[in-house]
Image (cartoon, rainbow, N blue to C red; front, side, top):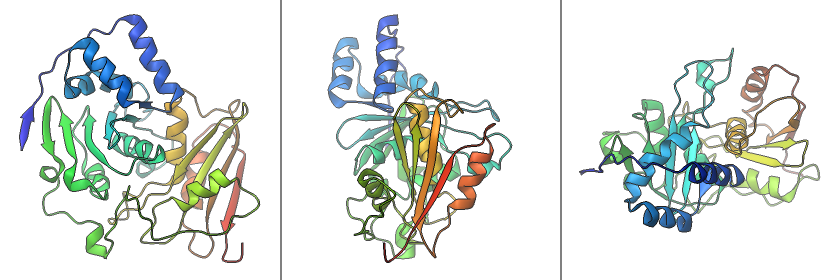
Amino acid sequence: MLSSSTLLKINFATNQTLEIKSLLKDTKGMLSAKYISWLQNKYNVTLDELLTNLLSFAADFSVAPISNFHVGAIVVGGSGNLYFGANLEFKNQALSLVLHGEQSAISNAWLHGESSISKLAINAAPCGYCRQFINELACAQNVDILLNGKVLNFKQFLPMSFGPKDLGNNLGLLSSVNNLELSLKPKEISLTFFEQVSSSYAPYSKNLASCEIRTFDGQVFYGRYAENAAYSPSLSPLQAAISQLVLSGREFIKKEIEMVTLVEMANIENQLNVTKAVLKSYDFEVPFTYILLTDNI
């Protein structure tokens, strides 16, 4: 089904623009359903019209030193909240390490506790990689894509798809049920960090993994490992954590970063090398801690 949304241009006042940008940074790229309803009423626009006009705010978070192509994406969560995302590139590293805008927005919604999404708005057509990533969602068949003022169901973007069920996985990303759980916490990490590890999505390798970025002023940012049935589009936890930091209006630079910590499962670990590769793309020696969880923690 295809529907159209008029490409209405909203002329946000300067103070309104500054308010939106400030709210996004304070909430790590989230606008509440209540605030969205208020904006709709104030400017007399539909949700799709508002989403289209907010995409430039999402693209402002893009870090694209290689392509100079700035992708903005916004997810509508089941709660009605909006979650922003943008692409993230790393100099002098394999292009496969790039975090795509759609991945950023979906990961953002997931980290904020959403268990479903209804719509994804983007400022450029999703690449095949992103279509496969979206297809991992438990709610994928019910997701609509808003692109250039038109709304299409996600199924139209990926016919004859390969997904979780083809590998015997009946859950999917954002599912409220996780078949993998950890019951014991190592002393080296906080309860919050442990919960992030436990909430990661690794139905294929079983390697629960999460990354924590701690800044010198005490702020903490998390990313979770999110596997994909096609394997390659899987999202590594460090990229997700850096995206959260960027969505807060911060930079991954020496004067900001106190420590980066990666936690994953012993004997089935698979995230250390990709984490080191990403950290190596920065122009300073990133303080790094690596912790393996074992059966006898």
